[in-house]
Image (cartoon, rainbow, N blue to C red; front, side, top):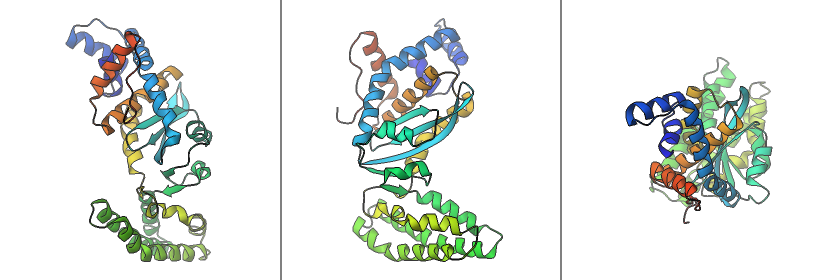
Length: 302
């Protein structure tokens, strides 16, 4: 059962191809109906560990959050990812609204969220906006045919490049956090001055974007005060496997299928973060489920 579950989730095989693999290579009689049954059993075996991780989200001091569109029974859905230091939780929901954040983080969450500038995150309060997204937005300005827009884009890219250069030095241990903050003071002044220039330019392409960034400029620099990264790359990396799986499978056909997807993705990514053998863990969880024993925990330190 563990192997079949990983064939479908980790190796992104369809139920029919999973059945063919088991029968042709392992001489294990199987059919798509049996793989659906095993999928349900694996979900049940892993679900207690999944729910334990989900309950731990509000206690985290730092989270990277992102979401990607998918489908459930032909209807649009969203796959959310919440990346903590040593575990990740995926959640398939029918909405991209802030209600998902309220459901999973609850009122108890008081940490910092690294995210893009989507407005459903704004109510969380303590944000770090992703500078990788900002760099792409500034590059789009620099690529404009409009001279005013192009000049501001190039001017914003210069301090952005310096920000990433200094962050790389901090990340590799060349400079400390305190030295990073000091080295980026001129960058901060330059960026905020350029945002003001765009805000008062009267240019329709610049005013709205620059006003949003300047009004919430504190969310550009949270990483200078808190132990978070200035990009949301961890969440995007976590979503990569899920996105490839979705493109191959075209989403799920039922809520039960979505529970399998979110559960398996959570286990796979968490095992990767903790350098665990995912096959060994899923096998142990299935054995515990069949023997009516507690599911092995994936919480760090448990």
